[in-house]
Image (cartoon, rainbow, N blue to C red; front, side):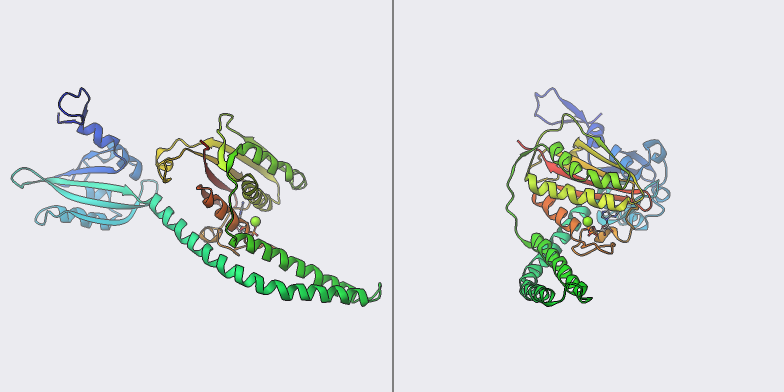
Length: 369
Ligand SMILES: Nc1ncnc2c1ncn2[C@@H]1O[C@H](COP(=O)(O)OP(=O)(O)O)[C@@H](O)[C@H]1O
Ligand SMILES: [Mg+2]
């Protein structure tokens, strides 16, 4: 067995190549001279959703028959070219999930340059894609924010004028005039626009976070208390699955209350036929996700799960965009605000939804230290 000695000659810890390959985050697959799989590590199993025993001895061409781009790269590593190549593409797993991956294929050669087979290194790009999406979204939000701030000021002044005029008009009308209702509508609608602008300004204002250790369970309890009446009216049951060992997080309590209030309101609005709202908290254990933050901080997650109408697949990419709404009286600002606040906290916000079944929003926050 080949042995890698990581600590110099005297070190007692000897780690085999097999152990190293098995422990890698990247999928490692080797194929022999005939293009049949001879090694398939654990990460490769996870990526492809195939077990090692299902893969070993199978021709690579057969295993990846849907991934023409991958086969092309493997062929280049074989004689006569025997080249190292790199590419990106989509992998369709055994259960039909599509995973974006990067792939490096190199020929394996003996000392004399004879071809022994190919080695494939696969890397899951899902995390990177998600990060790229986040960046794009943040850009869009910043742009909208600047635009909104400028526009809001311009609109507010004439709006004040309209409201004042409508109030004067109302006062000069007889108490039983049928025109009174029109004046009321004017005032009401002006108020509505004003509120909208207020929300818009909220979105564009660079907020100063008032950071302190926050017990997120208290925040969630507050939000659920505020929404008790709504829950009763809609026959919604609320289930709390709180992890009692959850550490306090670093955050701005008022802003976080806003986030969870928006999410719970959305969940309730999606369940006008009743159902259950489940609020779950837990500590992140997955190293991949923990490692993503710049300082590898510990994270917690809060899941807000409803049994509502769900979100159409084609709507999913847009729900965090300002003004995207599918509701008649919606503003489309709730989730944009949530997104901004969570981002400013160094957290993540994710969504999973099945139309007709329900939606889960997952929010991660950084543990206070
Ligand atoms: N829990 C949910 N269930 C179903 N759809 C949702 C949920 N939360 C958000 N959405 C969708 O995302 C859109 C944007 O939400 P939001 O930004 O809060 O704006 P608004 O609630 O004013 O429409 C909603 O109009 C709805 O289509
Ligand atoms: Mg909303």
